[in-house]
Image: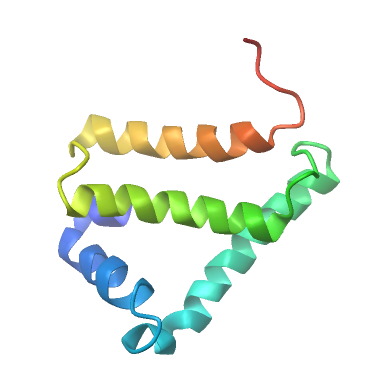
Length: 111
């Protein structure tokens, strides 16, 4: 997300041309995308093993959901569906973490 703030044109190409073009240009970058999934998967698995995240969601699924949430926020900025500014960038990061990690939290937050 911070990369978008610093180089929106590059992120636009990555989101629109690489990750969504799996049948062509994106095929050559799927190894790197898979590495990102695997790193997130490992973070989730470690948190589950330590009892910080519930284990009712597989680490692989949680990784895809997290990655997908970030991709959709970036898409929202690319297509001017979400406001862009320093405050919005910081808020979006917090919202993604709260949405995914809060949903995986082994102890629900107080209502």
